Length: 111
Length: 115
Image (tube, rainbow over all chains, first blue to last red; front, side, top):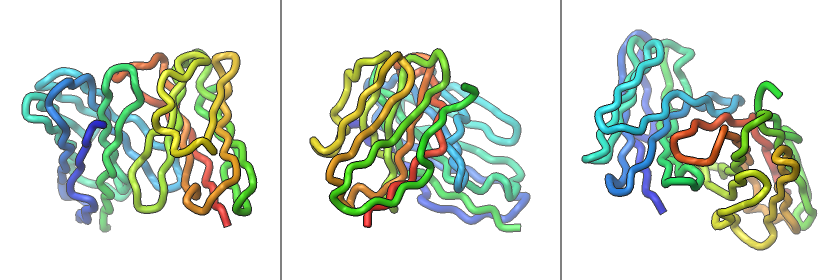
């Protein structure tokens, strides 16, 4: 069983500020790491799939980095907007099996 | 279809009754996954299908839970003799193939409440 830890559990950020949060995982037997955004009353939406150490991916104001040797990934949001309010899920894949998800970081952007 | 479709979106059932949840994945996606999220918990893996076979059933919480997939398409998750602890949002996802490098497309979920 893979142990995927996300921190913080929840986060309040002022509109316009930048923020980041962390996903930690065992560094051995790494296959891939996924980030998803889950807005209330909607389905989780894929943000990034990352497979290589040192990977850096960007989608608009959101970016993510990956360090497989030390077992962490950061998700960054630049210039937060109210529509960024959501739960951000990190998940780890162990080969052909289903992904193991962390409990998520619940982000609230305050106008 | 264009996305992953789940039905019903909400289900309230009495304790002890059986329920059936349906997932219609994206056409051409060979892998299909079931997860659930109970209140205050993270997403919990239940089962996945590659084609019509289920290589990993380890996540099913008890023998009251079963799932099948036919025609490499629709999947149903059946819960027999529901208990209150079965209350959760049940999410289905599909991906082009099984494997950690393939992103999931999730459905909107079925919110199950057992009273």
